[in-house]
Amino acid sequence: MPSIGARCHELRVRDAEQNWRIIYRIDSDAILILEVFNKKSQTTPKLVIEICQQRLKQYERDRQE
Image (cartoon, rainbow, N blue to C red; front, top):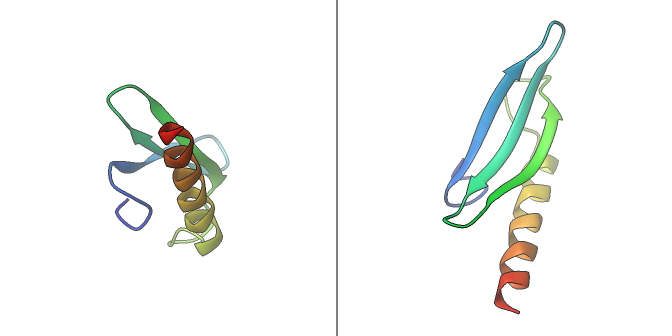
């Protein structure tokens, strides 16, 4: 999902009643699970995108330390 960041992807999971989305990023040394949410519309909610972007920024800051 380029709107969130490089190497970010969306995994779609459907159970008996709902559609779930898992936003994740694959690095050479880690797999980051950024968000899991119930998908209710065609588009990914803006708040979900913003939360994922914030979590990626925090992850990058923590890696630098």
